[in-house]
Amino acid sequence: MTSAQVTFGLRLWASVVLALFLAYWLQLDNPFWAGTSAGIVCQPSLGASLRKANFRLIGTVLGAVVLVVLIGVFPQNRAGFLFALAVWCGLCGFAATVLQNFGSYGAALAGYTAVIIASDAIGDPNAAFMLAVARASEIGLGIVCAGLVLVLTARGTARAQAASTIATIARETGLGMRATLEAAGGPKRDSAPARRALIARVSALSGLLDETVGESPDLRVRSGTLQAAVDGLFAALSGWRMVATHLESLPPEQAAADAAAALAALPPGPAIVMTARSSPADTRDRCRNAARAMAAQPVSGAGAALVITGGADALLGLARGLNGVALLVEPARAELAGRGATLRPPDLLPALLNGVRAFLIILVISVFWIVTAWPSGPSALVFGAIIVLLLSPRGDSAISNAWGFLFGTLATAGLAAVADFALLPGLEGFGKLALVMGIFLVPLAALSAGNWQKSAFTAMATNFTPLLAPSNLPSYDTAAFYNATLAIGVGVGMGVLLMALVPQLSPPRRVQRALVLTLRDLRRLTTLRRPGSQRAWEAVIYGRLATLPDCASPAARGDLIAALYVGEAMLRLRRGGAGLRAQVARLALQEALARHADYFKKVRK
Image 1 (cartoon, rainbow, N blue to C red):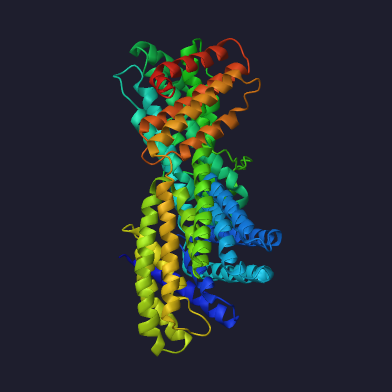
Image 2: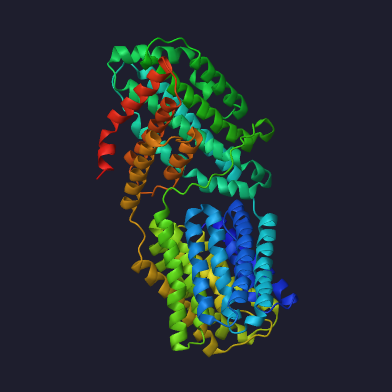
C-alpha cells in the first residue's frame, strides 16, 4: 500500500465525516446518504472527483424531478408507477451506454436516484415532493463536502499528464512519418505495428481529457479544442498511413522518386516534434507552415501527389494535436477550435441491451417484492438498479466487476456489523463515531485506489456507510440491520444474475459489428445523393475507434483507419474535381481497397 493510497483513504474518510457532521447539524432525515455520496464522489484523481461530482449533481436533480412527475401521473396506481419507473431506468441505461465517461455516470445517476426516492415515496405518494427535496439535499450536501475536501487537500495532475501524453504521441507520429519517407527506396520496412499502437493510445485519451476538464474549469468552454486535438492525432495517423501504404507497395526506385518532393519540403525532425524545451505553439506553427510548403511542391505524377497529400494531412493533424497541448501548457497562444461535441453512437445495439437490462431489473425485483410482500423490497430495488445501471456500460468487465461488487458488499456487511454492535454501543459523541468509521474507511478506501480486487474494495469503501447507516438517534436493532443487509445482497445478487442471463455482445462480435457498420457506411457514401461532410465521416470513425474493446486486434484498428481515408477519398471524388486531384483520390482509393481486400471480404460474411 503506497503513501498515495493512504492519503486517498484519509481524504475519503474526511469527506464522509464532514458530510455526516453537517447532515447531523442540519437535522436531515437520513444523514447517511450525505456520507455515502461524499464517499462515492471522492476519487484518487482530483479531476475525476470534481467531474464526477458535477455529473452526480446533474443526475440527482434530474432523477428527483422525473420521480416527482411519475408520482403525479400515477398517484394511486402502483403497477403503472413501477412500470413507468422501469421504462425511465431503461432509458437511463441506454443513455449511460451511449454517453462516455462521466456523462455515462450522470445518466446512471438519473436512473437510480429516481429509484432511491421511489423506495421511500411509494408508500406515501403525497410526500413525494418533500422526499425528493430531502434526498436531493442529502446527496448534494455530500457532493459539496467531498468537493471542498478535495480542493483543499488534493493536487491535480491530469492537465500535465494530458499535455505530456498528447505531445509524446504527436512526436512519435511525426518522427515515424519522417522515417517512412526517408526509408523510401531502401529495404522494405513495415510501419503498421507502430501506427496501430499509436491508434490504441489515442483512443484511450478520452477519459484522461475528461478528468483534465474537471480539474481545470477554464477548459470547459474550450473542450472542443481538446477534442479537435484528438481528432488531429487520428488524422495525422491516417495521413502517415496513406504515405506508408503507397510507398511500401512500390519498387524502390519509384518509391524514392515519389517521396523526394515531400522530403524536400519536410523540415528536420526537431522542427515538427516537441522536445522538453520547445513551445507547443511554435511547433504547431512550424507543422502548419511545413504542410503548406509541402502542398505547394510541384509534382507531375499521381503517386508523388498522393505522398504530398498524405504528408500535408499528417502535418496539419499534428498541428491540431499540438494546439491542444498549447491550450494545456500556454493557453494564451492556443487557437480556438469551434468543433463542439458530436453525439454519434458507434453502435446502438449494446446500448439497447443495457437499456433492456435496466428495465428488466426494476420489473423483476418489483414483482418479487409485491408477491412476497417483503418489507425490505424497496431497498433491494435500489441496489439492483445501482448495480445494473452503473456496471452495465463497462462492457467486457461488467460481469467481473459485478461479482466483485457483490462479494465486497457481503464482506462489508460483516465489518459494519462489528462496528455497529461491538464498537459503537459503548461510545458516545460524534468524534468517537468518526474515529470508528476511520478505522474501517481509511484502509478500505486506500485498497480501492490500488489495482488488486479493485471492484470489491470499491464496493466495501462505498457501501460501508449505508450499511452502518449512522443517524441522529443511534439505533442498534440487529433485526433491522440484517434485513437491510439481506436486501442489499438480494438486490445486488439479482442484478448480477440478470446481467449474466442477458449478456452483452462479446468483444469479437463488437469488433465485427464495428467493421460491418463501417462497410455499410462506406457503401452509403457511394449511393446517397448528399453523402455528408468529411468532418461527419471523421466523427463516425473516431467514435468507433474510441469504443473498440481493449482486446481488439491492432489489425482491426488499422482497418478502421483504412476505412477513414477510403471514405475521405470517396468524398473527394464525389465533390468533383479533375486532373491531378481526381487522380490522387482514385489512386488512394485503389491502394486502400487492394491493401485491405481481406477486410472487405471478411466483413461481408
